[in-house]
Length: 274
Length: 329
Image (cartoon, rainbow over the protein chains, first blue to last red):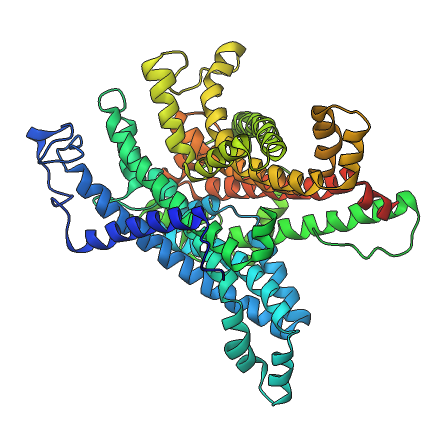
C-alpha cells in the first residue's frame, strides 16, 4: 500500500464513515432530547437554538431521532454484514480448500440465493414470522453469504498456489490449519473491501424495509420509518422528508467511497485501470 | 460468465446444446427456489393456521382452517400438490380476497412489468449516454461530473428520490400526480401516473450501469482498431457508438440482467410509494391481511421473473458476442 498517495474517495469516504459511526456511538450515550419524548405544543417547529433541526408532527426533536436512527441503522448493517460475511467467508474457504463436490455444492447454493433479491427474502420472512428488525438482519445476512463465499473462494484459490502454502502442506499442516493460518490472513484485504461496500447496501436495504414497515417497529427509531411517517405529511411539513434521506445518503456514500478507495489502494491493478 | 467446454458438434446443434444446458439449469433453479419458498413460508414458521389467524384465535378455529386449507396433509404432499397446481396456473384461492390468486396476478402483473420494462429502457438509455460520455472525456470535466453523479445516485434510496420528485413535480409545480392510478382506460393519464415512478426506479439503477458502461468502454477505447477507425476518418461519435459500444456490451448486458432483478424488486417499494396497483402493492396488502398463500405465490412469481431474466441474459450472451457465437457454431 502506497501511503504517500491516498485517493480522494478514500479520504472523503473515511470522513463520512467516521462521522456516521461517531454519531451512532454518541447516540447510545447521549442525544439532545429523549427521541420518544412527545411535546405536541411544539410540533412542526423549524430549526432553533433549542431544537437544531426542529421538531416533527408529535413535537419530538428531529436531531435526537436522526442520531438514534444512525445507531439503529449501523447496528443492523454491522450485525448483518459480519454475520453473513463470516458464514460466506467460511464457506468460500471450505470450497477452496476441498474443491470437488464440496465446492460444487457451495457454488450452486450461492447461485440459488441470487434468485432472491434481499427485499423479496425479507418480505418472505416478514410474512412468515412477522415484521421485526432481527428478520431484517437475517435477510441481509442471508444475501451476503453467497457474495462473500464467492469473493473468499476466488481469492483463496489464488493463495493456495503460493509457495509458502506448498511449504506449509509439505510441513504436514492440514487444510483447516492452512486455511486459518495462511489463507485467511492473505484474503483479508478483498474481504474487508467487500464488507465496506456491503455495509452501504445494508444501510439502504434496512432503510427500505423500515420504510415499508417490515423493519424497525415503533417506537424504535429508524431513518426509513421517519421517511414513511414524513410521506403522509409532505404537504404540511416537507422538511421532515429531507433530513432522514440526507442521513441515509451520507452514510451510504461514506461506506461506498471508503470501499472504492480501499480497493484502489489494496488492488493496484484495478486502480491503474481507473 | 461461465466458459462452456462444449463437445465437438456442429453449428446449430452446438447452439441448441448450449441453450438446452441453460434450460435445464433454469428449471432446476426454479425447483430449488420453490423448495426454499415453501420451506420458509410453510414449514419453518410452524403452524400456518396460527400465523393466518393470529395467537388470539381459538384452537377450534385453527383446526377448521387447517382442514379447509388442507394443512393436515404431510408437508411433502402439500409441496408437490402446490407445484403440480402452480404449473397449471392454479395458485389456490386468496384467503383475504376470496378469488383465485391467479386472477389477482393476471390483473396486477401489467403494472409491475410495465414499470420494470419502462424503468429498464430509461436506465439503459441514461446509463449508455452517461457512460460513453464519461469514457470519451476520460479524466476531464465530463468524466468527473458523470462519476460524481453516479456515486451520488448509488447512495440515494429510490423511495427517497420518489418523495423528492413528488415534492417538486406534484406538490410544488403540480405537473404530475403524486400517486395513485386510475386504470389503463385513459392511456395518457396512465402514462402521466407512471412518469415519476419510472424515473425514480431508473435514475438510481442507471447510476450503477453508467459506471459499468464507462469502465467497459475505457477497456475497448485503448484497442488498436479504435485508433484505426478514427484514423480512417470516421467521426468520434460514430466510432464511439458503432465500434466501441458493441464491443463493450458483454459486461453491460451482465449488469442489465442483474439490474432487471433489482428493478423488479424495486417495483415492490415504488408501487407502495405511489400507491400503484401492481404485484408489489398486492404482496404488502397480503402480508397485512395475513394471506400467507397469496404471499407465497407472489414471492414465487417474483423469483420466477428474476430467474427468467438471468436465463435470458445467458442466452443473450451468445447472440451479442461474436466470439461466443463462433464457439457454439
